[in-house]
Structures are given as C-alpha cells and as structure tokens.
Length: 353
Image 1 (cartoon, rainbow, N blue to C red):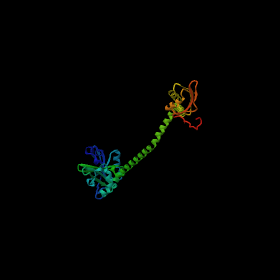
Image 2 (image 1 turned 135 degrees about the vertical axis):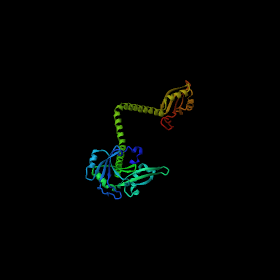
Image 3 (image 1 turned 90 degrees about the vertical axis):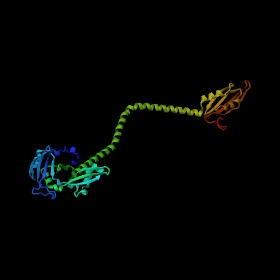
Image 4 (image 1 turned 60 degrees about the horizontal axis):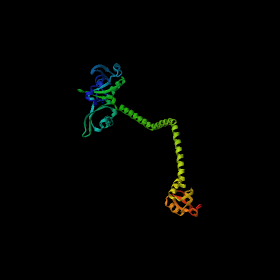
C-alpha cells in the first residue's frame, strides 16, 4: 500500500509525477451515483506531467476524449480523484504479531470492522503506532464504497481505461488507495502462489522418491562396468583361497593322524631319553597310539618303572614273557605302552593285548 511507504520514498511514486487524472463531476457521496446538475458518469480529465497538471478536457459516456488521451499517453497510470469527504476512516487495533500480514487480517475482518464486505470497498491502511509493551498495533483504515463510484468507474471502463488508484486530496496531504490491492486480485495471486507451492512440493516429493532408485541404478551400472577389469584379480584371489583350503585340509589330516597315532619323533626322543645304555631295541612299532618295543636289556624289569616315570607313556607293560639269555647275561623283552594323548590303550580282553 502506498500509505505504508516512508515519506522520503513516497515522492518517488510515479503517479505523483506523471498520471492521467479523472475527477467525477457532481459526485455526492450521500447519495451514491447521484449527480448535482451534471451528466451521470461524466469526468473532468487532466494530464499530470513532472508534477504539474494541465486540463485535458471533459469526458462523458460515449465520447472519445478519454480513449484519445489514453492512446497519446500509453503507460501512464489512471487515477480517479475524489473529494476528501468521500473517504471513510476508522482506527483499528490488532495484535503486534499480525503486523507482517495485517492486510490479510483486515480483509477477513472487514465486515466486522465496517458495515461493508471487503469485496464492496476500495481500502488501504497505514500503521499509526507500534506498542511493544502491550503487544498492540494501531492502524488507520481508510475506505471508499464501490457503490459510490459505480458511474465514474463504468465510464472509465467503457473508455478502455484501467484504473490504477483512487486519489483523495485533503489539504497538503494526498492519499492514494491502490486498486491493484483489491481483494479479488489478491486472492487470485494468493491462490496462484499456493498452487505453485503445492506443485513445487509435489515435484520435490517425486524427486525424493525417485532419486534413490536413480542413484542406485547409476551405482549398479558403474559397478557392472568395473567387473571385467577386476575379474583377473578375482581369479587370483580364488586360486589362493583354494590353495589355502587344500593346505589347511592337509594340515588337519596330519594333525588328526598325530592325535590318533602319536608323534613318532616325540616317541623316539622319549625312548632315547628313558632307556638305559645297556638296552637295545630290535623293533619299534607305533600304531593307533600304541607303541610296541622289542629288544634286549641287561635288566628288563627296570624298564617298566622307567617308562612309567616319563609322561610320554601311559600304562607300560610286558606283552610277552621275558626270556633270559645266560650266555650274554641279558633279557629278551617285548613291552607295549600307550602314547599320551593318542589312540586308546587296549585292555586285557582287546585284540593285540
């Protein structure tokens, strides 16, 4: 609204410098549409150039004066000048929080604040005071009923003139009510903005739904394109994995055999450590965790305690009678023992005991 523009900027209003001004003849606001000895709808025309006005004639319905003036001055705003008593005003108080959108509030509250509906008046409002302590906003509401201007508005419309604003002069001040702010157009703009915002939200929602699938498709295509180049490396890795699995299986087999039969080297080392120097082995058999010792010793009876004292052997015992050889003063023996942690030592009733 023009009244809300600060005074230092209001001088830049182009309508205050250049405009076509139409003044109704004999307009009487007490009797809307009535005239005092003048033709109904007739207007006096003046041309404002650089802030100076020059009379441009008189126009009545059906004449060509106004169309000719509009054709000679394209682009100039068309103003309808009204006398000061045509303007109705009242003060309105709103919550301070409504300052940013007080025009919309006044539009919806017009029938409560005045005897008119918002669509039946031209109106403007300007801020008088802002009281932050009380949270109040004081406004001056000014309006002109449309019914009072029916005849001149019809004349201007018939001549092809598009009214820009109402101009009410009161003393040294001039107040303009912009016709561009009439509620119908405001609602149309608001509806278009809402439709545009709804369309934008729908587009964003569609993008949010589709974008993840598009990105996934792009990533999948990029990965597929890299697979042929990576295939040789994959083949090498698979070959290494097969070799590792084979080696692991072999190691497991060896470890299982050692657990089942016993560690041959460990058994030989233990025998070397345990048997005395006067003992000679002629045969050593290791099968299913059972070691069988056959040989000759100066004292075969001492071998059982010696083997029992070593943790490598469990439950050593003679598997055959000891035979004494008097000629060389020695014993022939055969001893069986279980290797610790390997196999199972057969009992007396088992085969081979």
